[in-house]
Length: 305
Ligand SMILES: NC(=O)c1ccc[n+]([C@@H]2O[C@H](COP(=O)([O-])OP(=O)(O)OC[C@H]3O[C@@H](n4cnc5c(N)ncnc54)[C@H](O)[C@@H]3O)[C@@H](O)[C@H]2O)c1
Image 1 (cartoon, helix red, strand yellow):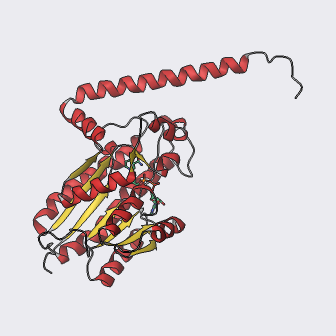
Image 2: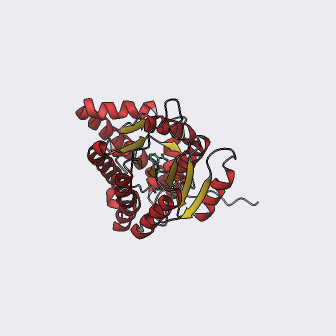
Image 3: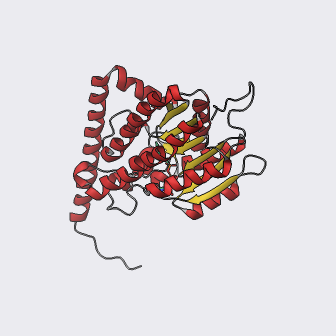
């Protein structure tokens, strides 16, 4: 099939068809809104039916049509079935945003194999399943754009995030390698690498897994960095990056600074990160000994209410 080129001046997203995994919340939700507003027909594919339906019903009329599909990205057969179904219904698939993900955090010695397996299953294998289903179809069409949500943790060391960072580094490697393969055959590939984004993910670290101190306090820790990057702003940055066919969409600016530092001054970056880990360890130890001292203090005379 011939490549679908946009007419000069036409919106690159108008009249297109996209699947957004994890479109029922956070970054995926913002991508759904941004795409629909630009006239893309969007399929929200999420394990959370209620979340997907609530996003679909809140998308304002007048843009591209939005539909939902319940999907667990860990299920390769279901991902493949959805991709083929959407392509058959619309005659093509222009974009797949492999965005569904979970957060897993904690010191490596605190984490069980379930933590490792869960994050690799969703954040890495989920992306592999999307690529495995959509890439051959896009090759046959002669066009398409695969957009994988990685993270800044896929570009720089992530202490307290080792399994998450491992999955996200793998998504970056997968995306850049596939980009090189697909470039001369009409299929584009980009990876999105945001710093912290203000989404529900920060409040649900280690879902259905044993909780860790970092996991329980992730949202508060992220907020200590200042005002968080908003998902709607990221979605606009992603669409701009996709339109420009960027290999890596790194945002906001603070994430680009961290990425540059890691590339051009890796030794300095590692030393700074190690100092940060040491400072954080000292703070945790101080808080723990203050708590122990308080617990050991004899309690005063009981007061009547
Ligand atoms: N929020 C951040 O700070 C941040 C930063 C960098 C990268 N990311 C990445 O962005 C992506 C989206 O995260 P978010 O912050 O919007 O989180 P979120 O929790 O708000 O949304 C994630 C969505 O993915 C869905 N999901 C989870 N497991 C799934 C599965 N197995 N199959 C299908 N859907 C599933 C959830 O139901 C949810 O709707 C993730 O890949 C995450 O790792 C987030």
